[in-house]
Image (tube, rainbow, N blue to C red):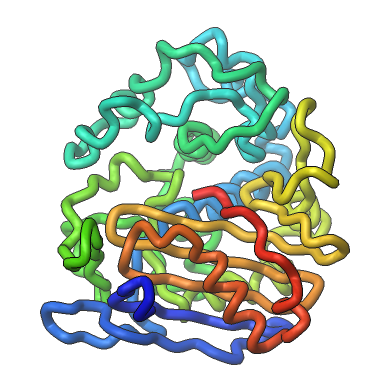
Length: 338
């Protein structure tokens, strides 16, 4: 924290399904000297994609959604070029659809509250980056579209869907969709470090995150999420195994040369015979990570109120090494998706 000038950080370590460390360090709010605790609520950014993927797979289990069907089978008025894009392609970042966060004017728009159609308009006139399924490229647009699909097939808003399918049943009472206008108990302030001086983060509209990573949570709540994964509470174990299996594109399918590849809503790491999955999150003012060392039965969850921390997963691995020394001997892999 000192090295990276991180104001506040909350961490959870879960070993064999039981929390062995759930604690905050530093300050959740620098101006008011409020300590970070296990109850501090952070913006978790793209770690929330694991929620979107989970609800999608819950509906796959029920036969409401098919991984092999086109996104255009569920949503109207999409570009003809997207007809080849399946739900499976989107979950595994193989859609080829350009990410709206890469649009040249994206950062000019993040302070504006835009409609979903205005967000999609940033990319609908662009060609696919590659034929669907040929390669893999991180794509926020796909996960934004998944939110719209979930709303269409269930008749619920995305936020209500998460509440009824995940947060409510698991007792994740501090985990909600982010709305800066809401009064949120224990909400952390977010910070940036453009030079050597810490500053408050600017307004970043939740309209540009949505189902691609628009949630708030605490490590206390994320422990409940991890325990549900350990016990296969929400999904069948076979479905979880499918999500945590590397889904190779047609090109770039040599596991020996790859350090990581997308699963379904998760990133799968090539740690030899060890099974490791995880996800990073990064947004103005906040950085997050969940890394599940499945082989070693240990998971680290990391939430902090500073952005531009390049390797939160590296911090997570270092923490995991205190509890599982064998992990210290494994070389760190390239960064996970954000």
